[in-house]
Amino acid sequence: MLDGDAVVGYIVGNFDESASDDFLRAALWRINVAAEAQGSGVGKFAVHALADEARKRGFSRITVVWESGQEGPEEFFKAVGFTVIGETPYGENLGALDL
Image (cartoon, rainbow, N blue to C red; front, side, top):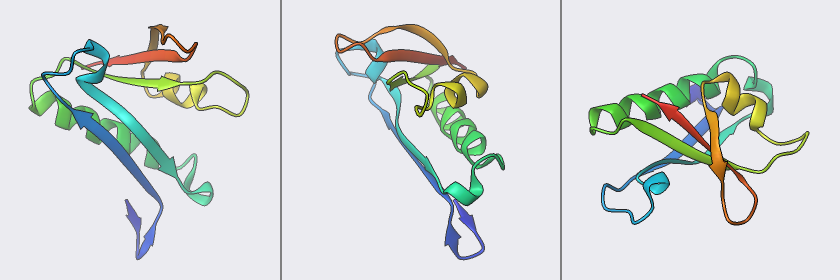
């Protein structure tokens, strides 16, 4: 995402109907928003764009994995609609956003 000529954010997702694990079929892998753009809706826009693409491809949800902690992204993911649906074998949160 650009603000003029400056990159203020990006998102990386993956769509794989044949993934062996359901939570890997439509997944948000990475999101990054520049510090000066945080809180301005850039991240929310990016997640919604990924969700729209997943919906167009026939998926009914997207997933994301994150670690808990004060400095982590948990509040952001919850604010844009993800809910915790489980835990990975490594103790990370597994979240889903129903489309």
